[in-house]
Image 1 (cartoon, one colour):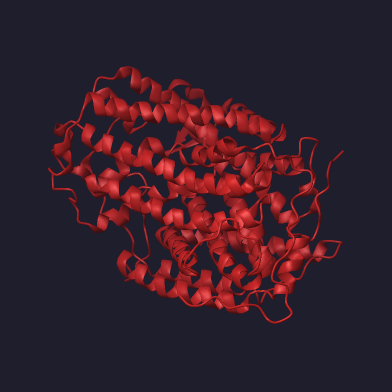
Image 2 (tube, helix red, strand yellow):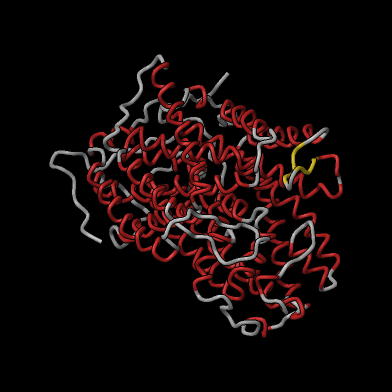
Length: 562
């Protein structure tokens, strides 16, 4: 993909990495891995097998494999960066090193806004799953479930619980998360084994229209439409907690890559067990008409059809536990993102204050307040989930460019985990991120754009009103970001990626009304990815500036807080 250029004569070629002061490094190898596994296996695993089957039939098995490969490319680039720079909130801080404040804030704001919404949404998911047994929690309004009455107390109490657990320290958080993840893994493995043991119909793989009943193209359509790719995005938590693990050189690559590989194996086996476990009389009208009437999800519905009543009840319990664990994880992620924004000096320095357990406690408080705000009865709440996935995809893309830039800016920097192939893997990762943005569709991406514009207003207000010196904005070095995103939004606006799927499928994609479909869109994105990648390489910060950012971030976090 082109040679990697060197640095100008006389420029530094490596920098001394300054770790975050005061944070506790209590996250061991398994705990770091489980922050990713626990986030990937959230509430979505209860529905993904059905939605993928409705779109692609048995070929949905390949959708999970291809989706995992795409996300692995992104995971690879962050593994190289996180081992080089094991800091808290790396997804925000890496772009600051190579492209300055404007680029890092652009990615950081949209990432924080999305992460801040995940915990309250998982709280709502927990309450919604419990609604059939505690109707006083919520009120259904035009298909949406809104918090009402005493439900407000439960919602706020759950937010307070997740916040408190995170404030008690990363060690307490990691131990509790380990327990919950072991529970979720045990339930999923048990479901797979029971489905294979009770009902195995291999004919389902080739009958009822064949392996690809709606054509091979639906394999790719199911990746965004059934939430396949988005299910894997929880791998990012290995990056956010990299500054709090005891051996980042060993633990971070293990966590980032391991979380995707482990969950990919689980999801593929679950998809096979689901497809082959279906009684054939349910497929008489075709895969697109496959449905279950079960409030706790299609897996519980299939368990009831197969007569495994105890499994259905177990899945009902897990439908509450799984989103609760994901909410706990993202409560920790959100606080680390606000901490990272402040360490880049793009947010008030109070957000870096650590308590005696090494936790940014004001960031925890901010997460709690903003999270409770999201419980307000916003219209079309379910569509906000799409905004979260689109925003996370946008926040992943800059890291793919940082890898290429860093190899030119600091070529001699110690890289215990170095990707082979020059620019090839970073370009493939950037391409994968761009596909995720495109697949999110215009109806969702326009909301992401509004959120970003609001963030720029906040950025200007902060820089105008702050009383201490802030680092240069470095707009030229970060100019690729608005150019890149404008191109992706235009492509999204003229795109048409609505799959041929039933109206009651889980995540129905609605693109624009333009002529650009999934296939043509992918070809255009290949070209756009290459152009933006090398444009970013051309405008990157000079090596001396990069070295200064790496050696001393604009403000050092205090060791303790009163």
